[in-house]
Image (cartoon, rainbow, N blue to C red):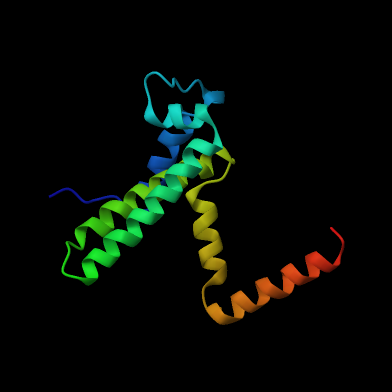
Length: 128
């Protein structure tokens, strides 16, 4: 049985395909779903992210009541995929997200949330 790629490798490979579909790289909206989403602009892929997030919630709720847990994986895959389209549009990559998660490692989630509130208040009070 062949070894499967690691998670970062698989995400990087998918990100490369998505980036190749960017309009600036000649992505053809007639030939590619990703190119079509990117061509339509943020409203198209952001709407898909919202839809997929809702479907993740619905699949999880179903699993809580005896539904198939595999549907959660399916819906999260759709959510990640569309989120990666957004990342590509904004010149970002899964590696940027992984770096942020690594930065947060060892930090209490409660501390992280409190710090974001402090920074938001400071930003609001600076008149910015």
